[in-house]
Length: 158
Image 1 (cartoon, rainbow, N blue to C red):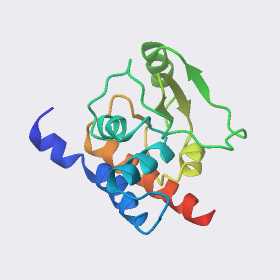
Image 2: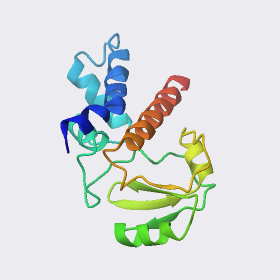
Image 3: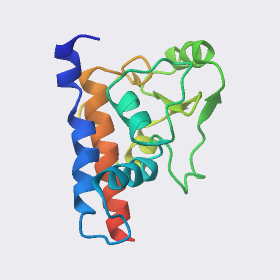
Image 4: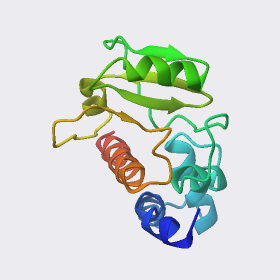
């Protein structure tokens, strides 16, 4: 990955750091590193290092993407799950206007309404998107940023 690509793909990572700064006054989380870890775990990552690898696109389809692209309750959606990326991609290519999302080491094909449920607004008509193939690209970063913002709004609402 080039330095140009990495600098372009830091919007989501900066959002995660911003959310950690919001916790500065919380006496239960005394230092910056612990705040970063707490925010990363809330977003569905193992720790901040894992979040950085995923959000900046330094990850492969066989790796653990965390649970950023999943939410509860989500039982009202009929999504298609796959354990293998190649099989998921083949199925996704036959379903226009769907999105292929990573979930840990699995893959799920979802519709536009599920994306809205995650807090993602797709503004233009789309032929869908394979987010696994988009890791490290501007669209990946933008969608991760939107998802992190939505998670932050959910946390504040609680």
